[in-house]
Image (tube, rainbow, N blue to C red; front, side, top):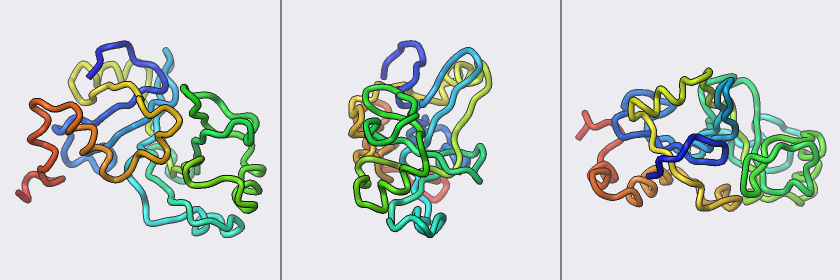
Amino acid sequence: MISEKLQKGQLLIAEPSIIGDLSFNRSVILLADHNEEGSVGFILNKPLKYTIKDLLPEIDAKFKIYNGGPVEQDNLYFIHNVPNLIPNSIEISNGIFWGGDFDLTKDLINKGLLKKKNIRFFLGYTGWDSEQLETEMLSNSWILTKNVYENKILSKASVHFWKEKIIELGGEYLIWSNAPENPILN
C-alpha cells in the first residue's frame, strides 16, 4: 500500500469490505485521469460475456469486452500500449494510452496489427465527482497502489487480479484472498 496523492496511472484495489456492489466488489481499477474536477478509471478485472465482434460485427476479432464501470455502459472505451499505431490517444502513464482514432483502430485489428496484449475494450467507465474519490479513500474503500506492470498491465490483469493484489498486500488482507465473493455463502 502506498500513501501518495492520487494520480492517473495508479491502481485502486477495492477493499474487501466492499460487498454487494456488483461493479466494485473485488475490482482493480486503473485510474485513467484525476484532477480537481473528478476522476475516471476502468475496471481491469471484470470481463463480460461479449467480444468486440459481438458488439461490432465489422471487427474480425474475439477480444473480450470488460465492464469498465457503471457510468455510460452503452459506450465503448479502450486503452492500449501502441500510441505509434493509434494517433490522437491520451497518455495515462508509463506507456498506457486511452482512446484515439477508432476507425484506424478497427482497421488495425482487422489487419492483425493489434493483438490482445496491445488493447483492451470496456463498456462504461468508473467516474467520481470532484473530491468524491478522496472521500472514498478516507473512508477506506480503496487501497491505492503503484502500477508496477506499466504498459504490460493489459496482459497481466485477469479475473484473478484482485486476489493476486490482495495476496501481495499480505498481513490482514491474506484472510480475504480465499474468502468467497459473497462471505454470506461461506
